[in-house]
Length: 89
Image (cartoon, rainbow, N blue to C red):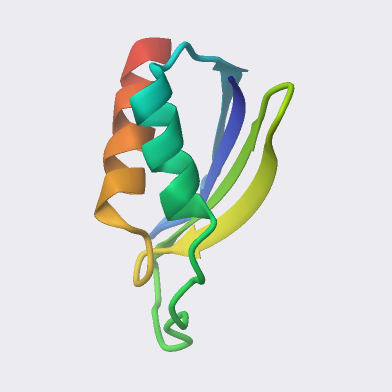
């Protein structure tokens, strides 16, 4: 599965972008897809210095683009981002 993760905001406002291809098991891929297609909870307009996470995922059967902020980023997606970023370092 191909991915592009863009993290923007924070105190200094420096954005970072990660892109590449990641191999996931069928179960992990299905769990991630299920979380990503859920309706996003409302964002917090009063959130200052928070991060905004833009995620693009695609493969031959699936294409999805979604944006979260600190107030509505699901824990499972946060863990996936951390794990994916750790593999690129």
